[in-house]
Length: 273
View 1 (cartoon, rainbow, N blue to C red):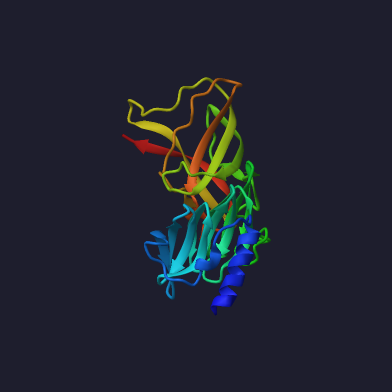
View 2 (cartoon, rainbow, N blue to C red):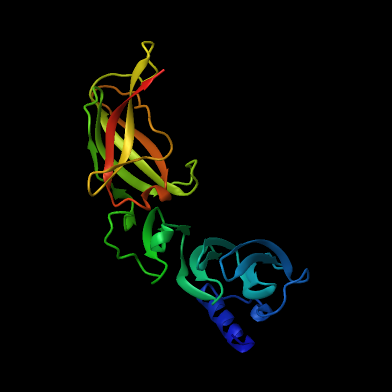
């Protein structure tokens, strides 16, 4: 790509993500200490792209020391290395960009973008309190037929009880959002709601050596079970008869990558102490 073409693309990029008076004439030039400092980057089999911070405090990208994206963004985060996709933020709004071609896949119109299932080339786009699943291939809402991920969040999730629990009746599971509080990093947050069938404290290890825990499994469309990440057993919360209860659980996105997800299964698990 020649320099004139690069400058035209840079001008289009500036306009499509908020405009401004940024100097995009640095595109195609070599980065050095007079231009800015290099922060971080990612590589695939063919290219290496790094993020830099310009003297104006804005961020851009360079490849092999040559600036390919001008320092016009408030923030840049790489999401995928194959292809080289970056979440770019300007004036408080975020979009998705393919760095090497300086091509916008999703315009800077959203409140946030997080990486989704890489095998399906998906990202999760935030607008207000809701998320929507987008395709990186089309830059539009995902039209896949799989049961997971949901096309929009929050979303009700199928579940079943494989055992009778004496104090707890589960009524709903909702995938509420992308759950960054998880120990797994970016993943999903699920809100489990139910009602108490009797008075009970949160289950603790029994002095007799056995205690009833519940285990969560992922079930595919053939009825096969897969372990829910993050621990095999979990305690139910304390409840009062007739009173609602609520608990949030997390899992990472990779848990669903190789499962044709049909729903959650809750079952008893006897743990010996």
